[in-house]
Length: 133
Image (cartoon, rainbow, N blue to C red; front, side, top):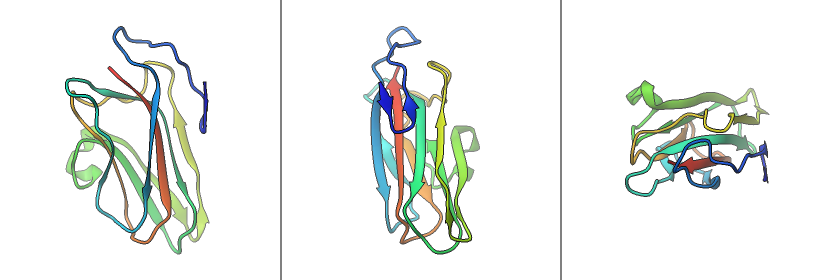
C-alpha cells in the first residue's frame, strides 16, 4: 500500500493489530490542541507514519504531535511524538516520518492522537497512518 509518505506495510506486526488506517486534519485558525483520531474503546493507537505540511504562513511556526488531551507537549512530555519547526523565516518545511512495522510510537489504551500549532491563521495539515492494537 502506498501513502503520501511512501510505502506502508499492511501486515500486522502485533497479534490482534488492525489494518493500517489513516486520518488527516486541517489546522487552520487555532492554536488549541485538536484531536486527529480517537481509538475504539479499549484499544491503543500505534503510529506507522505521519506528516505535517504547511501551505503558507508569515513568520515562524512550530507543530506538535502527541498522545492524550494535554494542552501542549509540555503538559505531559512522556506522550510526545514530535515537536517540529514547520516554517522558519517564511520557508515552509515538509516533515514526514515513518517507522518499521510494529516499531512506531504507541499511546496508552484509549489515548487520542492530538496535534497543535503555535500560531493562528495557519494552513497546516497533518496526516497520520496508524493501527489500532
